Image 1 (cartoon, one colour):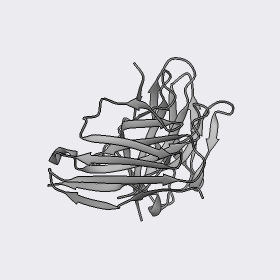
Image 2 (cartoon, one colour):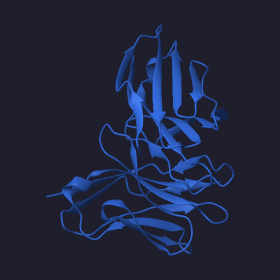
Image 3 (tube, chains in turn yellow, purple):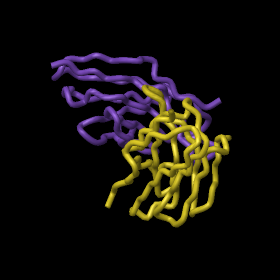
Length: 114
Length: 114
């Protein structure tokens, strides 16, 4: 299995809602990533987990809370989001053993905050 | 500062003609370079990478890229473009100080006309 899966594909939420995005990979990758992407822009790194531990937090607001329950799963918990948080949220994974490993991306979750 | 530049927002090419999507980089030391493609409402797909070795790298879907150290470039090429190649292309370089991070260019939209 060489896929990264993400659910849901689309999510609409109000500013007071709590929701979660889910990501799964079964490639035995040790690094998993969350990115945020605005239309026609490059992905912006949010978080990196390495061996299930948070290794990078790119100064992301606390209304975004990542979680890595095990080596195959990555969640992004959302609470009290703002309309400007509407974007495509991408999950990725990589072997991460060497700097030259490519990242495998999921199809993304299209988030709309009303 | 480390950076990647994609000088063209859009490249237009007729089907069957060769295509080039330009990328230049600025990093200290030996770069790890990547090309990704993104189709509408999809995640990024890995095309190819340069780590070391031959300057001409072959990748998926008939794409190739040439690493030129003296010009600090890593241009993406294909001998004969297809309409289905129309997509958004991102060049990226590995962050030399944190190998879990990719530094992306701003992206180039490739439009292949029938």
